[in-house]
Image (cartoon, rainbow over all chains, first blue to last red; front, side, top):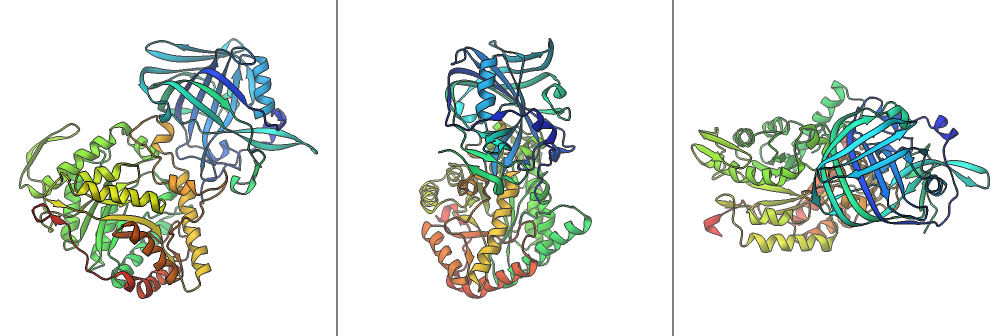
Length: 250
Length: 364
């Protein structure tokens, strides 16, 4: 049978975000996006994602960084650590955790889409020969990642699979653990790709010390408008997505 | 044949999968099936343990007398193997099979495989192009030399030569849109690997036919055949056949989905589609759904299967390559019975003409 997730989510639920399901969307103009992907070690790969999901072969960690020059919350930067996964046969990315430098944006992202966010200084810097991101938490670098030697591509060549965010969904019983499927739409103005480079990745600081990046895969940069759409699907994290997916939005 | 092996992998489970596959091939030969194809895959865990298809196909050749031996899809990626080794091994297989070899060419679509060999996905179209141009020359020239983009060699005799003259038919695996044009322009057969919709398929077949009329073939023969792929499950009880066939199709889709497509993790225009999955995924209604049946699926009673084949025939396909088993999800006896019933009741409705061999360029 296919490899299936077996992540013990009990500890994660203690500080999981609480989501109130609404039809809220978030549109952000002129977002710079850096995505750097590395294969991670195979050991215990099933224990990295919840039972609703399947790991991929090989497992890949994606460092996804948004830098918004303006938004309804002012400028903000968001760095995510995600794992490639599957919900049934569909490509997804399981959110391990995220860092954000704007408390209001973080609150909105957590409360509506289940982003597990800690405050941090997230900096994305563009040069002609590289695009780099540094995330500092408690005055310590927990992520230093870069795209080196950018060359232009079309944005349609870049894939950002929908996120799967572990959260507590508010309901009449109080809250219920669910995976929130977070879909986004992108309108690309420009895109590049280049060589991935990983300086620092403090996996423990991101919530799972078992993540060890072992093999570079790719790096891309895009400038685009982003719309995080309203939540349409949620999954019971304890059973396969094929059986436990619920349509909650139009 | 993917030769998929469910976990836990033991010496016995792998041996049994290979033994079952060989039994299916012997029966197919006896019943009058035209081809057996065995893929080349690496590192795909449960999905496929067929990393040395030429060895498996040699066993097939030695246990059969009539069926064509489809060595494909062979990965035309230099990090996997040199084109010299492809030409040599395929020629040996042609000799041992008594001139029954068909060579299918391709380039891999998964990061799982390409990344495992540190192959560059941006390069695979180009390397495939060079492989398909040099292999026929290696087969037909007494001595061969080459100074190309990805491959070069001084003059040497590449031996043995295949029995079929001038050489065995060559095919191309077609998943990405436009690859049917690549196949046609080079005078190569089109080995469709995604069961798309009828209209989409008809457009691709017609495009192929139009292009191959004016092709610039890579050798002295043109293989102008177009095949598609489907799932075979045939039983007198149509519901039972559909349930069994859907088990195979669903597991195929589910296991394939765990692999990482090159497109998914590397922004590249070298892979316009994600490979063999999109058609199956497109049929999934909600995020968690497994694959459902698609139009024209060859499952059901003999009449159902024959009706589906007629639809594909009307689209313009010359043949269908069937997947009858995957991960051993249906009993071996069911697979054999399904093949027998198909041969008895469906095949006679379509076996109207002997198979035609590729056309010599001068004879077109």
